[in-house]
Image: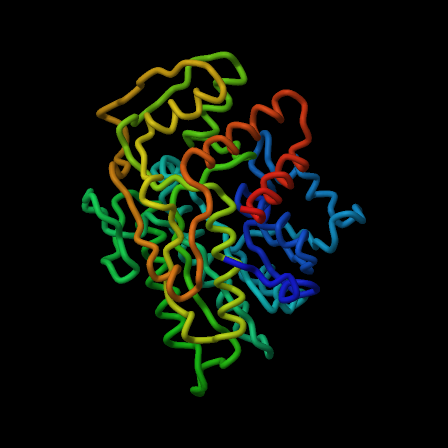
Amino acid sequence: MILKPGFWRGRRVLITGHTGFKGSWLTLWLLSLGAEVWGYALAPEPGRALFTDLGLDQATQNADWGQLRHHLGDVCDLEVLSQCVHQAQPEVVLHLAAQSLVRRSYRDPLGTWVTNVQGSLHLLEALKPLQHSCAVVMVTTDKVYANREWDYGYREEDRLGGHDPYSASKAAAELAIASWRDSFCGSGVQQTPHLAIATARAGNVIGGGDWAEDRIVPDVMRSLAAGEAIPVRRPEATRPWQHVLEPLGGYLLLAEKLATGGEVYSGAFNFGPSLEANRSVRELVEAALSHWPGSWQDLSDPTAPHEAGRLHLQIDKAHHLLGWRPRWHFATTVERTVGWYRAVAEGASPRECCLADLSRYRED
């Protein structure tokens, strides 16, 4: 995977959800490439957030950062979102804004559906008036597939589904986006020829700076920093663990291809790790403890809301069409993730730790 710095330098890029974990990393990466970044998102979640740890809320005043225009707004507010799109006139859009927590989706199913489905359609509607070419990458999740708990990976053409509200809402978003693209992209009377749209389905992302509730890595790191036993809800569940830079690199490469190659790159793409990185939560926790000693406790609860037990993605399409492949093995992913949190806990700069990971990733 080789990104073209010349493609991104000075290019107008709109990121929705730029105040989140993945959005903050993506904003940092694009600013380092010299892009003109417009961000549209809700304010960071209460408590600690990578966005503020990196000083991105002050980026417009910081000459070292390049151009970031930071807009607070809800993707469910079509009028405000449309105003931001009109001002930005983006050439690339990376849609990350979402309600992305499974357990929260049980507490707020309607909010989850509205944000993940209607919010995605609002963005596409806001982009419709553009009069220039725009590459649009709509990020969903690996959980869009009808999970059959099988051992082999899901391909892009496999059946969509979802048991919990989060997974189902993202599967519904995939259907809605595909319908919108088929209906409104083209040269027909009701269509626009300017938009090229793809969806990106990533595996379970980990890396420094995730402070979200009910995610295993933030739970691990908070417990280790406090000297407490790590609470583990589902030790035997397996996931395709990958460092946050892996799918983000895939999104950027897909955007480049969409912008230069058009419709051949429209559709859905999986961005997952290599097969050896499909590990259980138990293995992830024990690997983390090899870098930051501590203990964990099994808090499995058979009455807890349903979550998928096994999940794996096939990534042949991204490899053959985009030239994308994962760079870091499971051991490197865990080492860099734990190293980030431990260094920051000992006083290191979150920004410098992120830049170090980005530099290492580009070299590998």
